[in-house]
Amino acid sequence: MITGMNGQDFTLLMRVEQWLYREARLLDDRRYDLWLELIDDKIRYRVPSRGCVRQGHVKDFSTWSVERELEVPDSLPLIDDDLTGLRDRIARLQTGMAWAETPPSISRRLVSNVMIMDVDEGGRLSVHSTLFLHKVRGDSRVIFTAERRDRLVPAGAGFRLQERYVVLDEVVLAADNLSLLF
Amino acid sequence: MEHSDYVAPDGSWIKPEIFSDPALYEIEKQRVFGRSWLLLGHESQLPRPGSFIRTFMGEESVLMTRDRGGRIRAHLNACRHRGYQVCQEDRGVAHRFQCRYHGWTYDSDGSLAAVPGEASIYYNEIDKRQWGLAAVARVDTYKGLIFGNFDGDAPTLEEFLGDMAWYLDVILDRRAGGTELLGPQRWRIASNWKVVAENHCGDEYHVGFAHGSVFPELGANRATPLRYAREVRPAPGHGLGINIFPDNLTPWECLKLSAASNYPPHVRDYLLGIQDEVVARIGAQRARIDLIHGAVWPNFGLVPALNTIRIIQPRGVGEVEMWSYSIVDRDAPAEVKAWMSGLSVRTFGPAGSFEQDDAGNWSAVTHSSKGTEARKHRLSLQMGVGHEERSDRVPGELGMTASEINQRGFYLRWMREMFGEACK
Image (cartoon, rainbow over all chains, first blue to last red; front, side):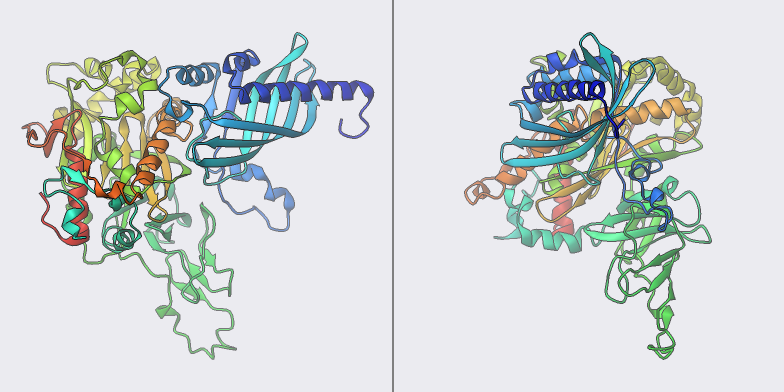
C-alpha cells in the first residue's frame, strides 16, 4: 500500500485525510453533536495508560516496541468507551455544570502522518495518524501528541469511526485532566 | 507569624498560606512525610519473588521489592555511591538492580551484591555489608495494603490506623481472597497536596455542586443532607463519608440505596451473592456500612463507592502527582472486576465524569493562596462545629453529610504533626 500507490489509492488517501480534518475541525469547533454522527454504533474508543518498562532483549529491536509500554500488567486505561460511554461523556458537557469545559477550552488539533495501513474485504480501513492537540484554558496551556490507530468503515460518501486507539506520548500526564477527545 | 495562626484552635478556619508557603512545605517533608505511615502499594502488585515496583514516599523515590525469600522490602531508590536511582522502570521482575552511573549492583533484598573494581581499584577494602540500599525504617501491611514509614520510632501501623482499620475492613476484608489493585493512572495537578487530601477526607459538600454534572436531577437540593449518610472521623486526620443502613433493611434494599443501585445485573448479583461471606467475615453490623469517600492521614485517598483508591504524591509545595488505582475483590469473576475497574476509570480517572472537574478547583484554591492580600483572610471550615455526635453502631465522631468535621480533624492533625499542638 505504502509503496507503489496508484491513482485510486491516492484518491482514497485524500478522502480519508479530508474526513480526519473535518472530524478534527468539529471537535475544535465543539460541535460534539455533529461529531457523534461520525461515530459507528460499534465504536470502541480507547486511550491506554503508558508505562515505563524495560525492553525485552536489548539486541532485538523488535522487543523495544511501544506495545510493551501499553500492555503493562494490571494497568488501567485512561478512557475505554463504547457508544453509550461517549454519549454520556458528551451529554455531561451539556449540563452546564461540567466545569472543566464550562466555559469550554480553546483547542486546536493538527492531524498529520496519515497512512492507510490496511483495507479489509469489507472495505474497512485501518488508518494511522498523528495528532497534535493544543489546549488553552485560563492560565494553563497543554500540548498532547499522540498516534491514533483508527478503524474507519465506509458510510455513504464518507466513513464512520468504528475503533480509535490513542497512543499518548506521556507516562505521567502533564495535563490535570482529559476533558477533550483525541 | 505565629504558627498558632495557621489553624483555629477548634479547626473552624485556616489561613491560605498553608497551601503555598515553601518553608512550611520543607517542614512537612520532615514532620509529615518523614514520620507518617505512607501507602506504598498492595501485595497483589508483588506476586512473586523478584517482583518490584518503583514508588514514592513524599518526593523520595522508593524501590519496593519481593526478595528471594518472599519478604516485602522497601528501600530508597538511590545508589549508595552517588545516589543515582538504581531502578528507572515502573515495575517488573528482577533480582538485580544495577546503577547505570558506575555499576554498583544491588540484590532484591537491598544488599550490595557487586562493585565494579572491587579487587583492582578498591583493593578489596570496601565492606559491601555497610553499603546496601538505605532501608525504609518500617514496612508493614494491613490486609493487603503495604505501608512504609521513614521513622523507626513511629507508632505501629495498627496504632496509626486505629479505628480507621475497622472501616477499611469493609473493603479490604469482606472476602477471604482479599483485594487487588489495578493501575495506577498518573497525572499532575497544580495543587498543594493538602487541598486534594482534605477533599478526599471530608468534602461531601462539594459533591452536589462541583460534580453537579453527574447529578443533574438534584436541582436546588444540592446541599440537602442524605438520610443514611454521615461523615465520620475515626481519629483526627483520618476521615470517611459512609452510609449506615438500618438493621431492618435487607441487603438488596441497602444496595439500592448505595452507588450500586444502577450497577448492571451481573455485578449486583455478585454483590448480593457474597453477602453471607461478608457478614461472616466482618459481622452483620459492618456489612450494613457502605464507604463512600475517605482519606488515611496524610495522603492516601479513598473513593470506595467507585472502587478507587489513590496516593496523592506531593511534588513541591504547589503540585501533586495523582496515582489513582482501582481496587477490586481478588476472587470476583473477571467480568465483575472488569466492570468495577471500568467504573473507576469512567468516574475517577483523569477523563472521569467526577475527576475532570476536581483538578481545576484544587489548582484554583492553591493559586489564590499565594496572594499577599488573600493571605490576610481566613478560610472558613465551620460547617457543623459543635454538632459532632457519637453512635453506638460505629467508632469515631460523626457529622452530617455534609459537615466539615473531617477537614477540621485533618488540619488539627496537621498542626499536631507540624508543631506539636494539642489535637482535639
